[in-house]
Image 1: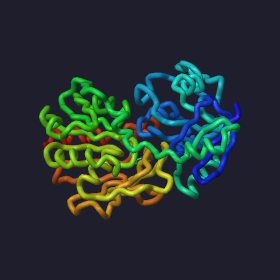
Image 2: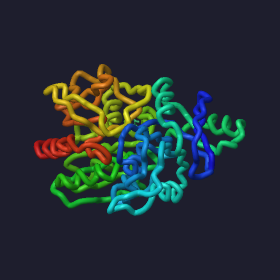
Image 3: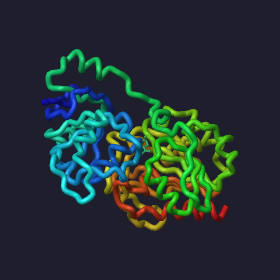
Image 4: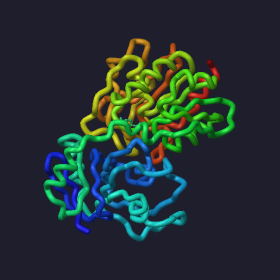
Length: 352
Ligand SMILES: NC(=O)CC[C@H](N)C(=O)O
């Protein structure tokens, strides 16, 4: 069926739609060439319509094991060419089947380069995926709906869960944790107790963990002040490692300020520099917000900066045993160069 993306600023981009169900969400773009299945199952994309800039998607099919959550939370998917005949020895089916089964509207045969240029120039904005015949009044009504602000509550675990049997007991705050983060912690000799995002700090500390991990997650960090309040109560009590939203929670809990990036960092080849050594790492990223480095307290030391725009990509607070990064050391998709951060976290727990 013929379909289109209509952006909040009125721009229309035409293509074909896999499902007729309309989708509304913040339209973002991701520059990774591969890793589409990990991308749309990453809970941090909840409610967003993801435009993949690489022109061909679906060519190696699907493989259930690489999914980052039990189901995708992305609101929609936009691709240039959608491959209908994947070729891969692990392939379990075409990408279109996954999109249809999960009722995720997918616009394909569309000009993803033009969409990306529009977002780069004017910033991320709301958009709708609708059939080409959709009435203008319906499109306006859909675009007028506010975006969900409490995705973390929807993507977090309902019950306390456990994983692994390693030496170090880590309390994981699940704000929408990617599976590979949990796997990497377990691989690094950790035993996990995974808590729902809104669990009070006292309940988490009561299990007497060796360390606390604050996960990635969807949305604006300023929309979840009640979680920041609990993080404040954890600081200084146990070693803490935060990734992405986890870094943002720590930044806000320490009195820092967050702001929205014009079009975010989403892709698998973002260069960050270790400010101490000058060494550059190519990283996997997915964030639309950042913490302003100059708003952090003097006890915090910036560890990594993004080489495109100098944004804060990591900091530590040695006196309070805090380490955190804005990028994704667990990759999935992306390079695994930063896996050493999990080892650093284990070392921090060992030394405390
Ligand atoms: N991957 C993440 O944890 C993203 C954090 C936050 N939702 C942002 O977009 O900046």
